[in-house]
Each structure stands twice: as structure tokens, then as C-alpha cells.
Figure 1 (cartoon, helix red, strand yellow):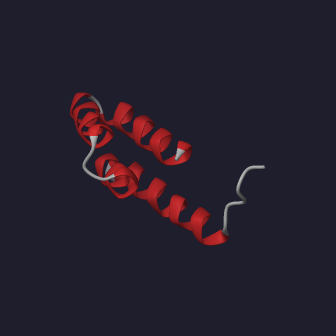
Figure 2 (cartoon, rainbow, N blue to C red):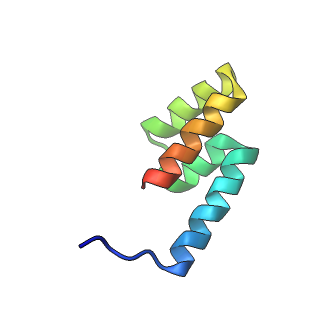
Figure 3 (cartoon, rainbow, N blue to C red):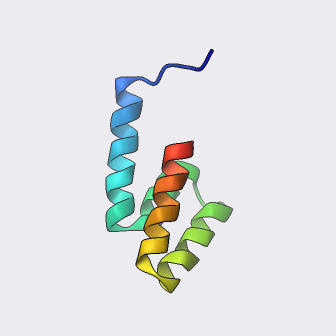
Length: 63
């Protein structure tokens, strides 16, 4: 049985997604820290802002 998401968890994810739209690496940093996904997101954001946003929202939504 999957765990139910709390209201605080959903609000936290919404806040991170808003940050990810404004500055994608910041949203990923808050979600996963200074790991591979953070550095990958920096690269994607440098190569094109939209790929960085897509990656950031994906990381936040799947964790």
C-alpha cells in the first residue's frame, strides 16, 4: 500500500517546482542535494533553459 502524501509534503513539492521553473538547479539542489542529478541539471540548464526545467520538475515529481 503506497504511503499517503501529507499536505505539507505537497506544499513543499509545489514550492520546489516553482523554484525549479525560476532557477532549475535550485529546485534539484533542495530535492537531492549536490549529487549527480544536480550537476546534470546545471549542464542541461546551460545547454538550454527548458531542458533544465523539464529535468528539475521530473526529479521533484518522482521523488
